[in-house]
Length: 252
Image (cartoon, rainbow, N blue to C red; front, side, top):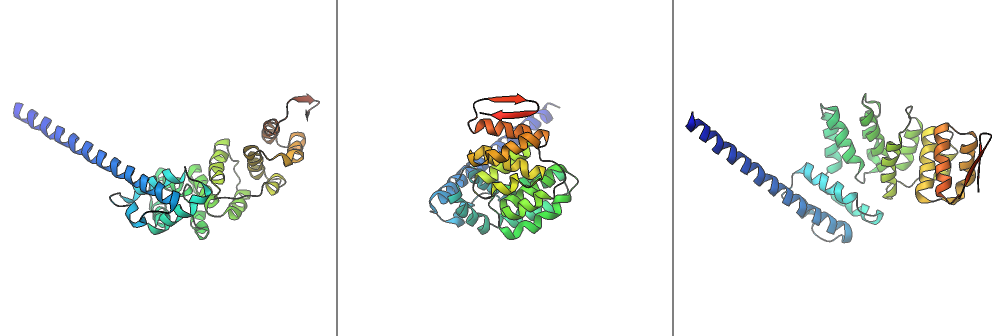
């Protein structure tokens, strides 16, 4: 009994040591990969073939996403070179298709959406737009936003379920990286809830003052939720006071 207990402790200690060792080794390799990716994205310097050395494919993807989230539009094309070289886009699409877990499927699509994607990949995401899980459907939509803004707007216009404020915030992260240029006026006059909400959010985020008349239209005649967003946006554009009179608002 005593010998068995001692052996169990020795084995358990050795196992913990090995787990800690390989965990630290993996973390160090990922840290080096992030440094290489950041250097390449900043200056296009370094050997792209060396970026993924010593790092498994999925941790490498997380490293690329980490850097992509913190880079400018100018760096997106350099990040795209890394994505293409390591076939990260096709890898994640295949993993999402073959995944037996809905949570994993949503995770792979979420990673994809944060990468600069190619426009011809949008068809690969359409199969996920009718998935039974809402998060899978949304991240498929977000992938299309990252790949092709024109097609994304058309896809969003056909979406039956309303976007949440969290959904819009995630779409804005793609737009704010400059990967998804979208004209805001067609969104505001579309008559579609989701497109209008995105348009109002765009105007507020980028401080576009030329849209006050369109925003006032939402205040006077729009959906209740859109009305609230329009009021918040008008105030953010510099309106000093809001005065309500018989269901109308005057911004001065």
